[in-house]
Image (cartoon, rainbow, N blue to C red; front, side, top):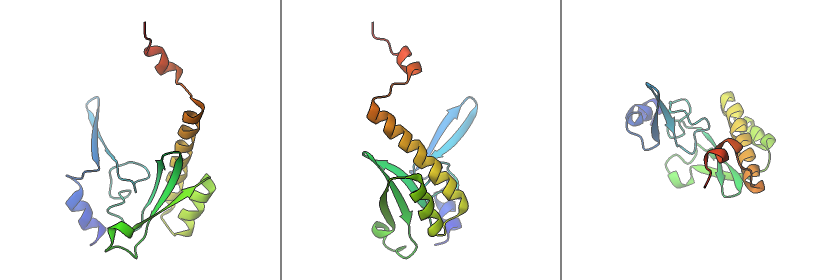
Length: 137
């Protein structure tokens, strides 16, 4: 099936669609694992694209998910996951797989954000602004 057809079917009633109200403006986000930017658009949705990349945190590890085109009829085997240890390996995998250039920058940025969050969680980092609001008297 073409990606345009899939997007037209899914765009208004997807289980990955999340809407958030900010003032009088409604912003739409995506919870798709293969969506690197979490923007709800056909450009970044993994279920619509034939080739997609996802960077997710599973436990204490950061996993790189790559969607292949050779197993389109087998959804269970469609995505391959690999444990990555540095941003350079994420960049190499995306470039080596001939994915779109915008995926490379977004995947590296997401890897860095997840890595920072994991390091802070390991050290027991507490955000001072949030901790001040949660005083227990």
